[in-house]
Every structure is written in C-alpha cells, then in structure tokens.
Length: 340
View 1 (cartoon, rainbow, N blue to C red):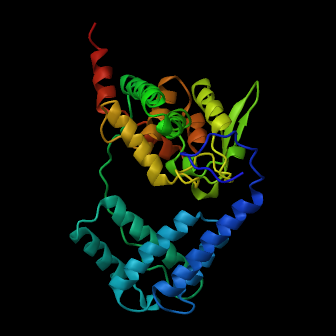
View 2 (view 1 turned 90 degrees about the vertical axis):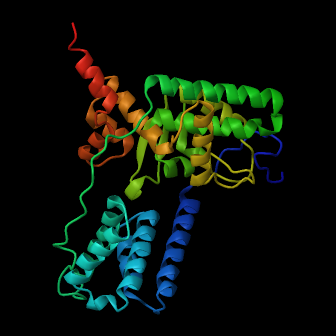
C-alpha cells in the first residue's frame, strides 16, 4: 500500500509499531545534530560548547533545552568576542545591561542569563573558570501578569466553531474534511488534557490507551524528558476514536499527520488553534492559552492544586499557581458577591 497523506484516500490505520527503537533513534539524531551545531557554529573542532552540550545530554536534558542553551550561548559568545575561558562577572553584568538597552523582554533576558549561569556552573565545576561568573548577577525583574485563559462562554464558542467548521467541510469541501477533523481533535485535546503544544505534536498512536473502562494518553516527551499519564474525558475520546479509525496510513507512528503524511509540526498546531479561534470570534488564542484554560477549569471545579500540577507535568506547585492566578474578571466577581 502506498503512502497517503491527509489529502489521500482514507484508510484504516494499522497498529503502530513499538516506539522504543524509532524513538531513541530519533532522539539520537537530534543530539547528533546538536553536537555538530556546536562543532561548526563557532569553528572549533572540540569547543567548550560541544563539551557543555555533552554534559547537558548526560543529564537527560531535552533536545529543546540543549538547543536553546547552545543558541543563547553562541549569541553571547559572538557578543563577547573572545574565548569563553576568559569570561568574568563584569562581562555578564555588561551583557545584562546590553540586553536591556537593546529592548530585550525581561523573560528573554533572564533566559539568556540562565544559559550563561548554567554554563558558568559547569565550567567552574570543571576548573575551566575560577568560579561561576553569573553567580551574583541579578535577574531582570518581571511584571507578574495574570495568565490569560478562555472563560466558559469563550470555550463554548470555540467548541461550537469547531463543530460548524467540521460540518461545513463535510458538506462543501469534502477534500478538506480530514484536515478539519484533525484540527478539531487537536484543539479538543488541548482544551481537555492541557498538553503543551510540543507534546501534542509528538504524540504517537501507541501513546493512546482506550478500553471500555479507561481512556488515557501517555506523554513520553514532556518538558525535561519527564513522562506522565493524562486521562481522556468523553468529549475528547469520542473525537479521538473517530480520528484513529480513519487516520491515513502513511507508515508513520505519529498520531497527527501533516498533508504529506509527516508529523504535524508545532507551527501547524498553532495555526490550527488560531484559525478555529478566529472562526469563534476570539483573538490571540494560542495552544498555551488552551493549557491555561484546562488548568483554570479544573481549579474552578474543585480539583486540588496538586492534582492540577500532576496533570500539567509541573514539578513545582509554584509554577501551577501562576497558571491559576486570579484574573481581573475573577476579582470583579469576588467583589460583586459582597452586594447583598
């Protein structure tokens, strides 16, 4: 049977192969690319950043984390203009000032400084530097803003827009219907499981478990390489059942596929959310807002912070608290209750 993308003939998907070998082969390829990135980006045969990347890999840091550190450190190295073995506290302080002068957002500046601090800590431990040059450099103060989520009315509007879009495609644009179903399933999962956008993109068919009594998905490539299980409610299960039964057979293990039968990329997930939100009359909706919506809905329904943290894959409850910080509307409603 030839490979089929989302515009091909609908065929029942065969059970996915075990993902152990392909998963680790794919992970090894990512790390190999990171390795050669370090070797060639600055020009050295075995640069400090190459060694640092190997250290991060030994700690089982995710490819995204390693890549982010290397990118930020490479930019810093070019700014510094000399060997990183000469790095000192004054350099880091000056770089911090430079970031602020050039208009870098506080979160961006702190991310770059965190990469330098991680490198400095490793370099100090290995006697490459006398100490961590970023140790006493203050992070940039950030303004704490309440997270944005969809309220019940907005969430319902998004769900209705997905239903209308799917029905319209079924009647008027049958060639696009499978794509529309995929997008509907993706957004429904985001709203009902709170997965990160990268976690949705990386889902495999074998990550989905559905029996008469239970439905759950396994996140194998969570942030920091952590694995967790997330229950699937009836709303998401119904759509997942339909999607898996008619998902195109492209030879890929990935649950969600692109138009040519390849893995659905993160950018495609973001565009799907944005398109469907626009149909619902909602602006600036992202997969992360869907994640916040999931967390806030759980809290509003009496789920404990500890359980919400476990479902979101948070190690710290403080991170989860940021997701459910009362918004302006929550505060207005609280004050309104005082009126007898």
